[in-house]
Length: 91
Image (cartoon, rainbow, N blue to C red; front, side):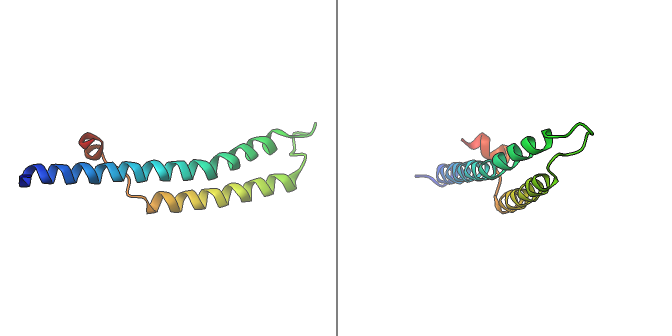
């Protein structure tokens, strides 16, 4: 294999790995965030006739859970080497 074609092949392999890793990171982030967001939607809909959350304890718990899920998702996002436009062009 010639040097230019070998470099192109290596670049494609690296881009493919980067995209696969970003796909896995996205799935991990979604897996943690989706349940937390759903829980927030549930508890924030429940109010009483006075326009106040009926179960403040549940609201605090859902907020804490969402905060933890966001912290984990942010750590994944920061640790991930996200693809660039050039990476997508390579594949």
